Length: 537
Image (cartoon, rainbow, N blue to C red; front, side, top):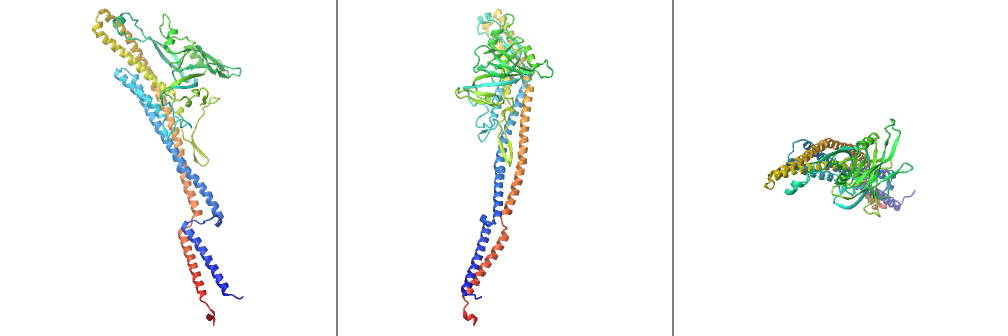
């Protein structure tokens, strides 16, 4: 075969270009430290690289964004729970202090001011937020737990159910408070009231100052149906379910109604039930009344005992128009309807048709196929009863303060020259005895209320502790997942590096060898150009 010069030069050019391609490839690898620059170079490496990159991106999202966000949310929640528990501890301390005699007027005023501050502080903790999102309000994070201003036109229809055995409690009602006379004529002629006490069983609504109530009835299918509009009369029916105590198996169910008489205020109740022989708030043993002012269902002894024996549950619907700054919003605790705009009512369901609580969890995806509910809902921590218990304590100490102020005023009146006559002094002594009677009632009532709240504050603290424990379990789960995500991130990064990257020392050697080959090919080609026929003669 004859080999021409052109054939030799063509072959040399081919070799030079071949070594240049290799040098370019090795140079690219050395610069990027990646095995391939285009998928076509090695489809297997390309596919594995894409899969590993996708997996690593997901792990980075979980580990670097979702998990830290969840941790921050839970840190804010934990801080709020700790603050609430400290507030309850302070309430407990005041309960112990207020349940013990003797107390001075300074002691009572101090307790009053501290309780008011704690009451305001308590629910402000419920408005704790993370990055502008309220942590205790479920997925409605754009709304606060409490009303932030007085909203006099805001109106809700609220439905509440009460387990009688849990909600009923004995309470004391007073009448005939002493009104201090201001003139000598009043000292001599005004009637001297003598405080009277009535003890009845009550159930408190979530709110006081109720605007109106709804009545209902059991239909042919056994369903309880409320009437569309509030009652216009002075009685209404509440729903009662339970079991027949005559059937020890509990198989016989009760599904009926209970008639309730409505009063606007306790004063109306007194005016309607006082007698010539008893100038106090009376209630028949089989009667039930509702006082809108205080938001209380009050039961006679017989009906209270009957409902307890039936293991009854009571359901009631009422309207409240006008909420004060700091009051809890109803939608986080009850089935209710915001009817502020009558044409566009907004329905909120906290319980389903079976009475099961509807949860509004905020789920963070913290790993593949793993979600974690990071939030604690407000009703798991506290409810309106806590606020009302503190309010009862405030009312009790205020009553005691006012009663002892009356004693002080009457004592000063006895020392006033204006009332120096023996007749005035005798009459003022009667006033003073009536005021002392009121103060004794008030002190006794305060002592009992505060003593009762020692146990209740312990129960509230325990509830907060349970919520904190639940949150801690979530935090532990999150921590374990975080560690697992960290390990997975490291593993996938190693796999990705093994699949995509080249060893720098190896590629330097390969590049050097390729470049040397390229230089050699150029040298060889250069020498070919200097060869002629004389070299062969």
